[in-house]
Length: 638
Image (cartoon, rainbow, N blue to C red):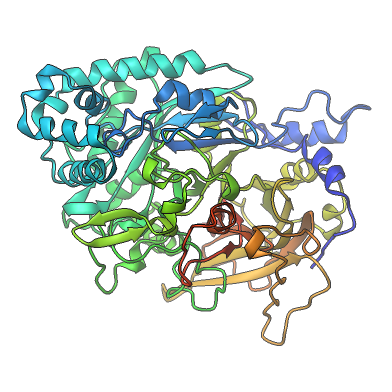
């Protein structure tokens, strides 16, 4: 174990800039021999001619605007144009009339409005005569004009009827939807500025199979408007079964020559369906299904405002950090869970189960990278605790959100305070363009955080040594000697175990770092699934106890004033770790989890800002922000 707390954060940041992925513009990898030659003969300047990215690009692949039916029904008035201007750093006025701005602009953004009834509820809100002929839509218009609890009723009705496939025909007309889609892609196209800001085309396919069982996917385009406009986005009015979406994706690529991928989210609200070994309609999965899911869904969104679904504490009782922003009461409609459902809802369990399914089908359907996004429905992507503007306008800052309801389905309630200010997605991309960012997503060289912009490097190989953690350019040595996050370890040499180079740098706006953990999952010879969490580098002079547990770093949070001090923790951590229990005959995966010291949660900021706020004693006031890298996989030869 190596921990380096004496190196300055500034030095690390500057050194991290040249680190990155070896990619061609088509997403392929640079030949290793070419890389070795480059690093052995760099010339005087180590930065000249570098074929890799210089920094992670921060962005959001899951933002809703007023063009989503549930968002405008909930009161949102910020559309795609204003949302993109906000992402680029512009100050805007929120739906509730408050000035809001990001601490730092994003590098890229996906507007992921729901394809079901895209833009149609705007016409209901505006009182379009053709829509007012329908009595239900007329009543919705009246309630939306009243606002408050009346508008909230519309929101719940829209979500319920969409899940049942029973929205009025006029707002689901396919020709109208295609016209609105072309309008939206035009707005996105107008904000795309290659090299500076990438406005990426996308939408959310919103399957609520069986009444609120969340099987949502965001569809992300590599292409521009010219191709994206050719084929109308898929909707759940055609099917709410994910493999039917994959068939649409194949049709899109065959028709246009373009490329798309899908990112599932909120397995924690799927009531056991997200990572099940049966399709939602009860058919056993097979090799064809496994191959399709592996192809079309290279990523999974494991943290967002509706909970973090890395791992449930009941599935990993020895993981003291698993109990983080957990939503486990029920599905999207708060229909209670039945025993056994949680097993098929969390990312770490799915990653382990994927190793087992690979033996059965010859392909791992759950071989995905890990990302975060907000799923905000305000048109504002705000993932920082002190700048959190909620999920819907009713959850924007104000004393009333201390006791407000985020969801209320026939008395089944989720409170506003249970929403999390999460998350963000970092992409190790060769350049800031749609194509390069999409290619990084496809090869899984991405990671997610719960909001802070923590810089993380994670490489795996067979010959990393402790001195590799002493240099100031972890990316250069990482690519020269191994594979990055999202990759596969090459075949092992005789008598070797994999080694990993992992490095993290704090977000200058957030807390110091507590520790880095490497989480391993594997399947033994009997087919049983296992996991183990390794603390590999940490701040301070702590030492593991006799059981191998590392003491908590402590806390400096002043809850009453919503402040903390970075007098504990470290600005950066870096080490090389070798798996002490490696069995070359067993498939495995490894990913890194980076933990900050405790800092104030958004609820603490609200309590400090609004003296009249009345949070109950059950409301958490602090949290441990974190980053999750995409895994690196090991597969035995043969």
